[in-house]
Amino acid sequence: MGSMSDSRQIKEHYVIPFRMVPAAITNPNKYEMLVNKDITMAGQVFERFTTYSQGEIHALFWDGVGMSLAWKTRRIKGTVTDLGYQDIDNDGEKELCVLLNTNASTMSFARRKTMILAYDLNN
Image 1 (tube, rainbow, N blue to C red):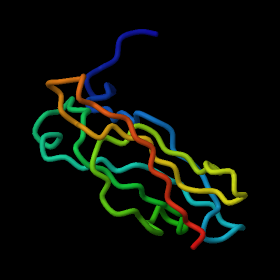
Image 2 (spheres, helix red, strand yellow):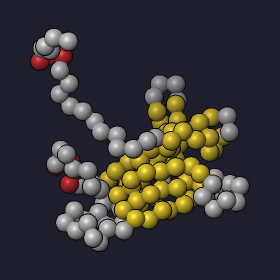
Image 3 (cartoon, rainbow, N blue to C red):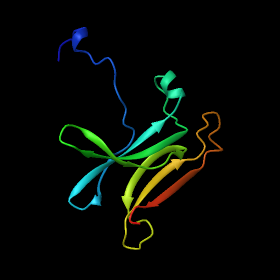
Image 4 (cartoon, rainbow, N blue to C red):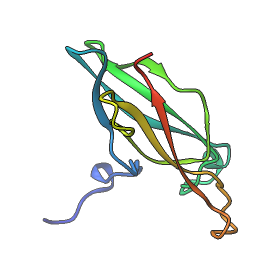
């Protein structure tokens, strides 16, 4: 493998803590990538901060040059830990499912609650 010079080393890295979901929601012939955008003030100050007080789910599409925003949810209070596009209530229609921790406090794990939000995107 050999040693690497300083110019070839990766100085910064990004962590994507969970999956991104491709889904055909607005047009059955075009897929969008569902991703989470964490929103925090402390994360701008602390480099390795991973507990967020709010988040949004963004649907991105390829516009020929890069990924552009198709739509997004309103702000979700809590740390978004996973998402999916599934038929959660078994009615034949898929919903956007978001798993989150409602209390983003880092001091007490006992007060954290887990919740699933389901957004009906068909109406």
